Length: 371
Image (tube, rainbow, N blue to C red; front, side):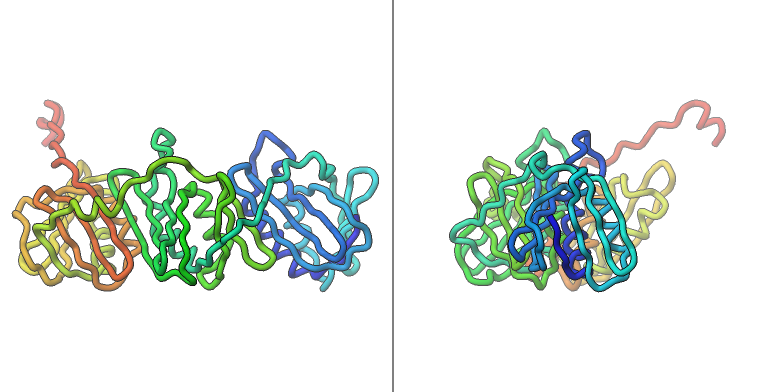
């Protein structure tokens, strides 16, 4: 195998593919990138078994063939070159030579036949989708981290007519983002949250992708790029029914950015692991957090339609911070009679269940004497 291609194009493709290649793996060849050359086209493929990426471009191919090169080393070599073009040639002794300008490197490689090359089919009836990065930003954080809830470790992505919805939930919180569909159509899938995060890292919101499914595989593609991952099977949480079941009793309109800053303030002393108390009083959202290390308070001015009881409701401070870090502008905050919290913006819905009031830790006899 031997070909010559533009260095910047090669570097960009290898950077993309390298993101799916595991840096640590008991299977040595999985740390590599499959390089293939065929009649004017070269492709780079990487996989971690759950997700796979393939990038391709035109090139001057002198000899067709394939090999597997360590992804980290290949990226380093291409980054060090200064020339406009790069030549890559596989030698007979399972090595390859990379050259650009006056620089030359030689690396050990694996035969392409030993690589677990993933099937990357192109689905029929694919639909167009944009803003993948924003969809992931607003949903992946809320997905479950526990494999005991496999279905909840996924992100539900649904295109129905003129609407695209993505949802992540771990059972105690939920974030859903909606946007307009590019061309309509229907598509519903549950993607592993880490795969969806990876896809979002490989593309930008401006990219228009073709999305579809083939069997138990999801496929996203654009010119010169194809991403696939395994689907999660099962029945996902019925978000529409959840929304209908919420009966708001107390509500206010506040600024999301101001609330996030206040949460950062109150957790500066006590930490994010505590339970924060929220109450709506005196045209403001009152925020209080107490722990063994201290007590902190803050408030966010807003328009309160109906005040909560003075005792308020308790929530995970860390969960609230994660959610409001991703929200901006004016939002409507609603609480049910038992404290079920929901937040509404133009295209985002957030839900979080309340927690029990923390039980004060009793001081030991020694602590009392010291006080």
